Length: 570
Image 1: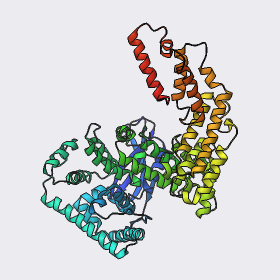
Image 2: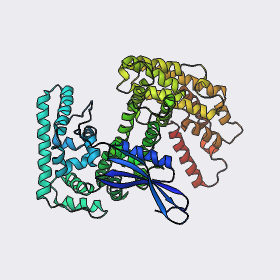
Image 3: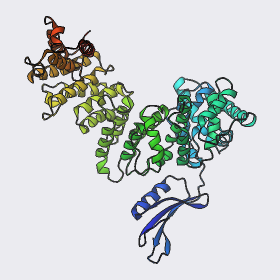
Image 4: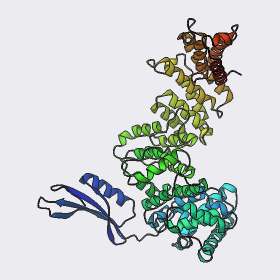
């Protein structure tokens, strides 16, 4: 440890398996105490302490323990975490899919965080699968819970469903044992998982390549006793050039890992609030730069482009599920200052906003609505209805309101909230002045783009009553058409003194731009102006006036035809 003479460093240690292990080192005591408390709160160690290391001018280093927190020996049995839903799974193969593993992650969260095993490792490693079934009443309680939920959804007898689950798990266990004892699989010793999979393709029965490959991968991962250690190994194997089939296998395990709350916390690093954590998850989902507080910055920098390109689909789904689950829950977004809770809500909502729909779509709209219930007094359906108004009052941007309401109309909550959704959309959009939707100081182009985006949002709102949707679209079209006429936009583009080629190009580019939604009256007026130019006698000759090179003229006409198609002309 390097220190500057006369300065202190603060070493954070955690007691694990009766040994004090250094977790992090900080230069500030406040930062060290915050990190120590965060580590202790995860419940994965017996205690934490902070050692202050001080190097005197004579080179002698003194060590003093300035903070210690210990927990009593855990005597309570491990229990399942209650869940409210469980995806249906009838065939044994369905127990291995992402949705089923996510259920395992939620149910066995306490056990998973204690033993540092992902669901993939639990169900592909014979020893791990056998051991979890032997932990007190943990496994029977999990089966009972899942059987009850699935039977309620399907109308089946819970006892029959419970027996089916036990039989399925028994088959999974026998399969894992057979592979463990009778199949000679290659060991994963280097970073070329792709080559291992190719070798397995030559020996595995039809349809079993993925299973055998995940058995090999699980044998490797169980040796890494920390989430960051597992992630580091997975990233070493996730070469961007690897085959999609192989990357998909790694993607599934990474998805499992980010589905573990403590693992995701380790990946994100220290976050000052839940709101900041949710924004960091959204950043990770989109493949943006990793948080500077994360100790997994190098690994996340590799995963970022893969996430941004959509090549880690399961990991993205797992991240979004975690984000929306936390967003819809009741944990404070800003524990430090409850008075800032609404501001924290605004921060998260704004992070999810995109002009073409919320990040997370209808499920995100539902999560925002459920979250806002905690910011008011009423609950139940009444609370949800008030929450819709509350979200829109908190987020004053008309485009946000419309995008949120359109997504909400396509969410599971829509049935109870239809009146509120339609009423607010009317209030937002049924206006007489464009400046109620776009700030007066904006340039004309930005105002038209705002109306075009509002139009596109309502146009995709197929969940709305068709009459209401058409009425809203008509109002927006009227506003856009009136604005174009008042500002003489078409006249400014079609300067009579300019060359016909320039006039045609300017108008066609306007027709093909995002500013004029196809099918609107505004688009029709611009197209009519173009048609007027196209119908002039000898149009092509006049269009190419001044172009001496025939080949260049042909290229210009081809480009014109391409622009005509883009502008909506056939």
